[in-house]
Amino acid sequence: MLIVESAMDPIIAVDEAQRIVLFNPAAERAFRWSREAVIGQPLDRLIPERFRHVHRQHIERFGATGTTSRRMGALSALSALRANGEEFPIEASISQHVDSGAKFFTVILRDITERVRAEALLARSEAQLRGIVDSAMDAIITVDESQHIVMFNAAAEQMFGWPQSEAIGVPLATFIPQRFREAHSEHVRRFGETGVSSRRMGALRVVKGIHRNGDEFPIDASISQHTDGAAKFFTVILRDVTERVAAEQALLRSKEELKVLASSAHQAREQEQHRIARELHDELGQALTALRMMVVWVRERIDDNDADLIGKLERMSELLRETIASMRRISSELRPLILDDLGLVPAIETLVERFSDRTGIACELMVNDTGQPLADAYKTAVFRIVQESLTNIAKHAQATQAEVIIAEVDGEIVITVSDNGVGFAVGDSRPQNSRGLLGMRERAYLLGGRLDILSELGKGTMLEIRLPLASEAVAS
Image 1: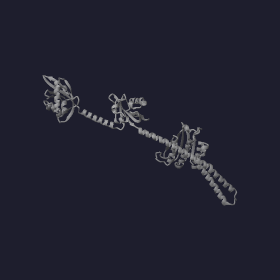
Image 2: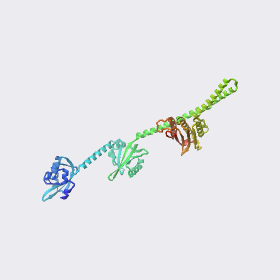
Image 3: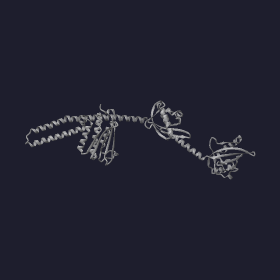
Image 4: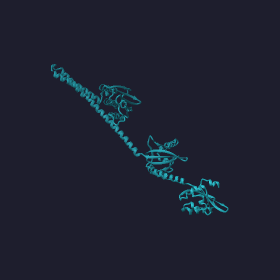
């Protein structure tokens, strides 16, 4: 009897008329009835009215079976009634015994209110999760450790052309092109060994999927893993990126076409400037020189007493000299003929020398000449980049010193131009010399190179341009 009194589960005994003869303290707590109030009362008092008739018949049938004990409500939770009229779910087992010719039934029950509530919350949560999974726009597939599908949402059905009923139990490899299956299976296996919760699949490339009709398509995928008991599961979230990949390829083609077009435009412009520069130098220069010689010839043959005429001729000669100098400067800026006649290094040396003479800014030039002649496009690009850099320094830097370094490093032409001027904030959307920087960046891009800028206010500026030396960069 001590065991019954100290039991944590309610224990109730009734006689053959189903009147309560035993009601332990745990039953008092569960039903909120005192023992004195229920001893001798019908068991019906503890059962909701709608279940009383069925419950009474159940005990009577059990008594007729002669079975010692069995569980009550094996297929569903039972309901009990507290003293305040509140119903609550219980689990119960019933046993019977005979004492001095009288039959008694003992019920051991357990209040499972919290468990039922937790199960209801879990069921709602699972229903919500199923709703989210099925309404997700991305395909969601879960596989077991053997990589067979255990979950296949509606978006996956649409993406792969497989109904869920047929996809469940199918190997995940079925949805991957044959040539990738072994590598993909090994990837999932290794991921399972890492213990990492989730990561993106194919981070450096687009993964391929295969439709039921055999069509391949690109996908983005992320994978996660979780353990349920002793079983491990992998969930893959997939997105069809066919349109994105097509757009990226179209953009890449467009960029390449623009690159070719811009390169052709640059080449045509350089050729036109070369033609104009050559005509200025050869035709206009010769004509001006001849005209100046004629002025000198006339000056030598007039009377020294005609001061006005002599003054006029001397001014004409000086004007012609200045015009010839301007013509040569313009011709050199359009296309320095020395670049074609003597090569890149002499042309850069002349450019730097004239920059210092014109601006008063001391400029040091260092060239690592490999002796290997460059193709015309590379010579022109290097010269123009240095020319534009020095122009920017003259216009904006307020510098007293500058430095130009040209070297070949690891298969690249590296051009570094620096100054000790006022500098600028690199993050500014449009610095003062943005047009010049844009032109240099474009020239570098057309040859597969890049332009890096290092500058701070008050600390000068350094430009570094790297041009990769492809096979066509070297002149034959």
